[in-house]
Image 1 (spheres, rainbow, N blue to C red):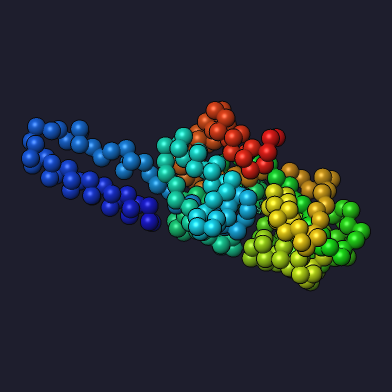
Image 2 (image 1 turned 180 degrees about the vertical axis):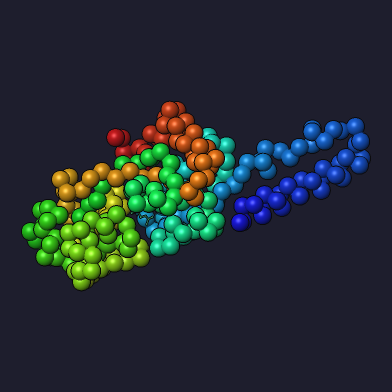
Length: 268
Ligand code: ARG
């Protein structure tokens, strides 16, 4: 585990410095030479699929930024820990928790009963819903049901994939699955599918930023239930979960959450 290794290295570095000092100043007690707080705050490795603007994406300097990144960083500040974001493909992401490669997953992850079997979730930090995007040449899509006779793109293994499977059948050849949401939406742009289904924030963001392709969005509040995003940790890691939940509570109470929310989505 990288975090443990790094913490170990930092601690030994301080131990070395401390020893040298002690030899010169025998009066100083061991306690007063404890490593400064910066070395004591645990740093957690955060897995995120950074192809999901505006929640997590790479800016021009290849830094991972976005709503989730700002929220979790603020949470960490209040919860007394540090975070390091590592770009992690969506497919296989959940397994990185059990393997110990990632400590936290922050990836616009919808809390579902099925997922709760294999990982633990923080308190919800965002409400989302599925949204349909339709291609320029596509007419007659007013509700989700209207996609029955259409070709639909989704990101593999997402809640969007799940709802479309329910409509069209799990093995339907009308479902085209992609490893990222931008790839699914590109397929829509180029006319390979009639529609795409995904989280509203991401679909709206993409359609808005690619106006030249004439895509439109179709909302269906009847067919799609609200979903709630949570940060995930390895099942049973209550200590970390408590720190995260403490942080979430704090940023909701002091206005930090609203500030970040407004920056990305405008006032509620
Ligand atoms: N909210 C959806 C889900 O949990 C999609 C999340 C996809 N996130 C991402 N960063 N690709 O299934």
